[in-house]
Length: 259
Image (cartoon, rainbow, N blue to C red):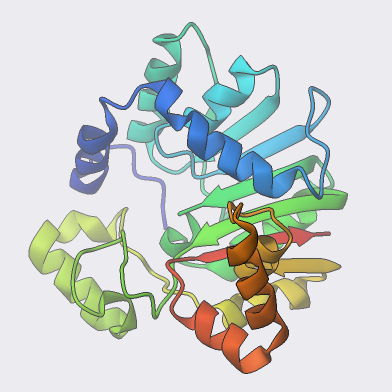
């Protein structure tokens, strides 16, 4: 993908649907993400955090509000401008800049935590992006990854039956027919991932520990607070065929990877 500095219809639609959400309403999502990170990595005022793909910018804004250091990188100039304006509503100037993870220089051994939520489905050359993130993490650093799941029954990406299972070319044609040609400039989901595909990619990169969605549930780091639910998931997690079946239809691919 190339950085596109003009206005794009998909970004405009996204901002229109999120513009009235107060920052306070994002506290739950913030705590959910942190609840999946802090069991494995200390996060305090000395932690260097990078978010790849900021959306409205709520995460780096909340980080700064709480005294945490979080830099954001975003491919859409519209979203960068909105995030700065969003922060100013609360007297906060977030550290966010324009850039494409495929070719941006994010350094080497620079960050303790890197976060990418609902981002890598839109990264055309996703393996190159993941390689950059791996190199940018310090030893022992943590990568928080959330994206699409190809076989999920419900996808936030686009409301169409079995959308994620469609061949790439079919998905592209469908989105263009419904949303216009500029969806291919920014907003298209180039990728619909699967858990095995991503685990292989993270293993190849060299991460020492890789937790998937079920692992996190069983460790109590993914919102599964009820003991009964955790007991059931622990059983599923210990039986490979059941685990693979559960992950196959999960609503999204979630991983926490330790370098």
